[in-house]
Image (cartoon, rainbow, N blue to C red):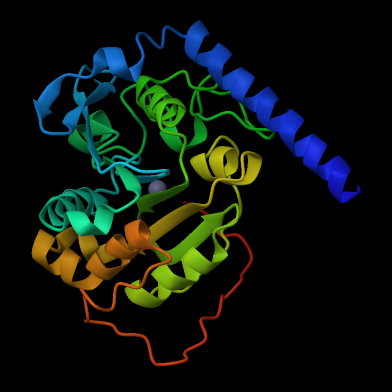
Length: 283
Ligand SMILES: [Zn+2]
């Protein structure tokens, strides 16, 4: 395929998938737009929707600018270490607003609140939210949803993405202890891997995942930050001490974080390398 043909194919595919997203949102009672459901809880903090069991989906929107950076935690309800990390990042950014120059950061610290309460990977309908997105390899099932974006939690993410089209996405998971990426995010993945002392691994794109949809189908740099298994025992201070640099770098990239958080300064002239391995289970 020539470069021009590839470009046309990509444009056509993007239109197709966005059309599917719009239809899916319209056809599955997605409800009002994010603008309409915004219920102010405080400055820039609102409910982006409600879960199956009616719990609010907390959203923080900080800063303004051409870049929209999504940071998402606990899409799998039994992988909750990212939740205090994202709330801490929100606090850090509110205390250090110069870090937001030219950037709007959309933080979803607890996007699967029912799963978190019930201790389940899936939402209250038993659907894995990270398999509920559109995409060329999507599978319809009880576990993944019988139509794309069938679940209100996935709809909340999609609605926010329509409102603030993502420049990049960082989603925090457990327990595979690595940095995975979909779409053009290799340099960001290397940076986050270096700062978090986790290897960069390609785990393979799962059908219906955010990485498959946003990263592979739509070309949005998408990071899956897989924290180690035992971090759920850590408190917020410990989590921030180890992963705060990577969280801040997720926002300020490609700017360095060395001047602010100097716990893991890179060696001068260090060359980041990727460790590419075959897909593993999970994610
Ligand atoms: Zn996960």
